[in-house]
Length: 476
Ligand SMILES: C[S@@+](CC[C@H](N)C(=O)[O-])C[C@H]1O[C@@H](n2cnc3c(N)ncnc32)[C@H](O)[C@@H]1O
Image (tube, rainbow, N blue to C red; front, side):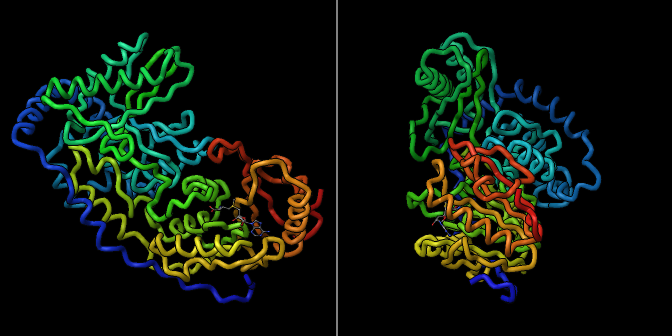
């Protein structure tokens, strides 16, 4: 059982498997004929690049914010400090400096937290938008967001935007976009469409028109078009429609970024990793302080916390869609990952404790821990009851995602009353944060929340309630 006298764990990060580096080297080769066509396409691209250069020069003049520690990892200082990367960019100065508008979607309610994370990574012009953040950066920055962002769901690069009136305008927009820069017939393709207030009659037809525009262009320029693969495509394009305009994005992430690469898809409904990281950010968990999840399930919140505390970049052990695109520079990507690995701390002293009533959940949490390349002692998982759990330290954070979904039945109300009694009696000086879709939970607990933050867990509207436990008299 979690015991306040339990000695602090010495936590060790497991070694990275040898398979990872090999993935960087699988960039596809082009045939001679295709290479000639690509070279021709590259010449035609000059006009487009001139416009981009103008934007990149303006960005290059920007000064990094002094005193922002995380700026050590921003594009400019990284270029100055990593000789291999610098040499690479000197060989390809135009490409390396090209600036793109990027949209990074995230769960509803995490926009401001994502913006703060991106600013801390050195993306100073990050601005919140609907369910995401917008910013400008170069291709190296796009790779860095994929590698380092714990809150983003994916990284979309805007490649075209225009007012559209009919589906034929979408076809034209897609035909006029230089897709050959990023993919061709040697890649498979998937196109997805989403819309808000779009007057278009059929989104499916809009999707088809975008796909046709892309394929027509590639067939005209290179003689062949990509095959469609909706399951494991190499290249993914997102068409977004609003009331007047269409935007085409190239998806650089592929699988959603909350898939860190360690979870086995077993059909359970765990909290998503980026939501778990967002909850820890909103709770302002201090990675040097104890963290307890008394309804830990498969351990997502704690595994995410361990990676935060150790400085493990969330994308370090997973592949990305940008690795399969034509412009991928495997050496630069390897340099970025090498630099990231150098900052991973090998051990951790923070007590991280997970408790769950269900022994199958604890078993799955332990195997997730292993697949997340963490040593078994990194997180202490045990079967137990949230109603009786004891604090592992005099102070700390209790952050949890208990069962919910419908309004509480009588048994649940009784459980929450007992959980609340335990918190009041044993957890004074603890910061308690609970995500739930039951907006009456504080009433059932007879606790007054200091904070209530609206969040979405998938489609479910939730609140993250924050309670500061004090010695006595916290009842309303
Ligand atoms: C929504 S799930 C947690 C999911 C978890 N965040 C994850 O990512 O896998 C809620 C968990 O609470 C556990 N649970 C239910 N009642 C409990 C209790 N009284 N004490 C401890 N765990 C309990 C369930 O077994 C379930 O695993």
